[in-house]
Amino acid sequence: MPPAAKCGINFCKSDIGASDALWDGVQPDGSGGHPTVRWNVTTWHNYEGDGGIFRIHAGW
View (tube, rainbow, N blue to C red):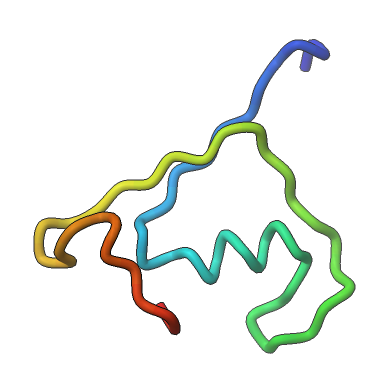
């Protein structure tokens, strides 16, 4: 990949925990210290039934 290439990722707003875990190197079992995943651009999508995209609750 050329040095100028950018990497983007898209998550549903209910996947905030998953994006944080990838970024921080945390496995689903809660253990840390694993390789991290980095990207340049994050976009978020939402489903109508989830309410407003900015209505984010702790624990989601």
